[in-house]
Length: 276
Image (tube, rainbow, N blue to C red; front, side, top):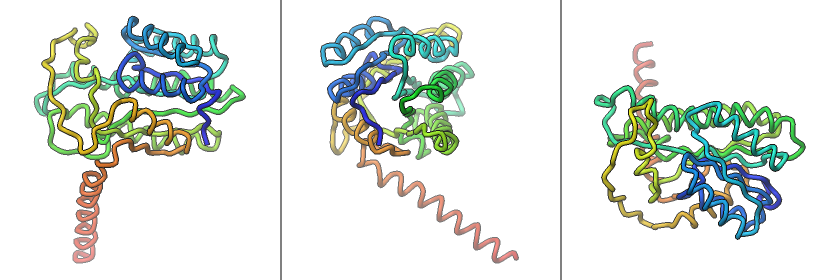
């Protein structure tokens, strides 16, 4: 079991949306320290102030997770302030709508750098420090149900990269388990967050900022606020779950997808038997 009470948490993408909600819920559940990391300094500072009002010590760190040096500096600052980090939420993410066959290189580079390499830089920076600390360590990577189910949609790069993060999480889980460091992979469904306007912060080396029209989110069978989602995530973290599912209505979609894989596997077995 991972205790939230008394823990120190670092949350990337913590200045808004579900990252902010997790920070606040962690404070309400007794976390002693929270580090809010975000590419936007203002929202990070505001979130840290709210966390302090909720009862936990908190600092804000402006960090671009697509830069390894920035994530290393984040880790150094967190350990300087609190001495240990028990919960690392690799939560920052971006998305851009375009089919895979039409996606330009800079979109692949941008989304890969934030959504896959961002968590990897967190792993590189925090795992060595977690190995040296006395307290427990737990890494939570924010993937997506899209990281489990590939289907035709307009977020082809995002879906592809989240598949990669699911794989990273599963392998890392087995690698670090003997050392007592827990790894979880959170696979949420749709949520109303600022990621739908993440283009406002796209770095110049990836083509610069771009305006994006607000897009409606398909109505969820059981709509949840980010506060509700945060409670579910932390409950699963306490149970040390490898996979965290906060949106249970997505189960039929996941089951149907893997049923297709098993059907094709059975076809492969039949073909092998027929050909000898």
